[in-house]
Image 1 (cartoon, one colour):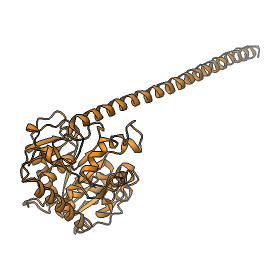
Image 2 (cartoon, helix red, strand yellow):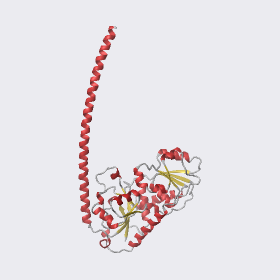
Image 3 (tube, helix red, strand yellow):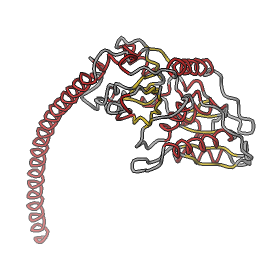
Image 4 (cartoon, helix red, strand yellow):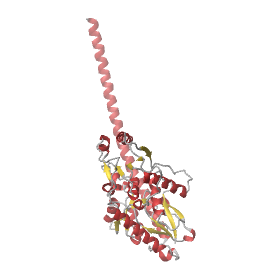
Length: 382
């Protein structure tokens, strides 16, 4: 069996590459890079089977589904992009789960979900699923460096939080390292090896920090895995955070933004508390599940036609996909026509209101001029 590393090649968030790094550690060898957003058009040599750990934030482009026929998937640590459902930002919501799109999950399930929101999403639609946890919980410890324990990492804190952190750490004697997961690989020619090495260098910094303060999920979970004390500052009133952080927020030492800014911080920077241990059971189960997948597939020499679990053909999948794309575009155009009509209606109302306001202003201006003339006449007469 050949194996592919799932990557978001144009990512702007190193968290995506950290997940790729975590997946890569399990593979006996890395033969392909599989682009997350083009997994439907992936091609292996002679359509040979390619094992892929499907850990990622999925369905930004909801018609690039299902994956190519040659993909042999391990459905773990999957997060579904539900922004379009909760915020009604797109005409396509769960239609990609109907027909062949859903057949893929039914054939290759159960679906290992990264978070509670994704678990609820699949459960509500009748799919066999379970909470697998995030693959970054399986990261190994990194090498020790001579500066271990002499610094603290502040990762992607908002300016007001970073200011509060610097004030809090005054007198601690710790070096403050401000780090970020922001990146831009949209026009980069960095190789997979270079990108994964960048991840390893970053994880090594987290490993050797006295502790880490962050708002990032894919900083907090790697710190749990590497046993580096971490303090998460996350606004859980934001649905975007809630959908990804449950249940992890209670697994780490955490604090609300306003408490951190006010200095109400129950976290000793001289003796940072060890991380909680709620993740251990999930970590161990996830490692065992992925290793079982590798053991079951590594010696395979059969063609994809004999090992794939779906019954549809590649041609049928692409025809279904094409129909979904057409449906989406038609629906989108229909919605846009309605929005355009509504905009024009309000535009007419606004124009009428502006005209009425101008007329009123002109009337008042005339009345004022008449009053001013009358006043001047009376004043001149004494």
